[in-house]
Image (cartoon, rainbow, N blue to C red; front, side, top):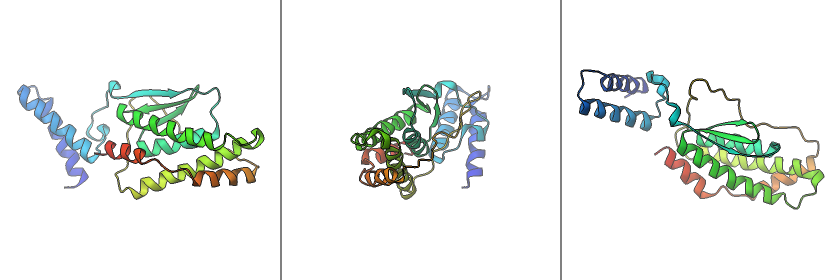
Length: 204
């Protein structure tokens, strides 16, 4: 059965669920079947004409006086891996379905701690470039892990009235030695198995 067939089936089920002539049991059963199909095959609400409800979304922030380049790089990688939205405003804000936001924040906190620890001994003048190099390698590892997992892509559409930028960001650093040292440090930072487990549960 193609994605189009599944989408058509979901529309019919939702029509039955909203049919005034259906019994309460019939409506509930149709709605449950439609939700199960949408979850299993990652059919977005907009594809079947159903707008997501505001209560289906949650926002969690990580407050920083200034968001550094390396933090943006990690946030962008987390965004792509866990299917959330990220925007900057008095820190980094993770927005999306509650279970995805929880997993994304867990991942960001764990990775940010490891990257920050790697650069703790670096002189201040070199630290920004070092951390950016380190984060870029960690982000690349996350992308590679996502590609090798063979898990379906995690996508969602923001509810009406919310706009999001691309998230993440990068800056040019002239201190290439510090960047190279950061990349070398990033190569030794492992992607915790727990992060992959979190993502698998999101696609289950």
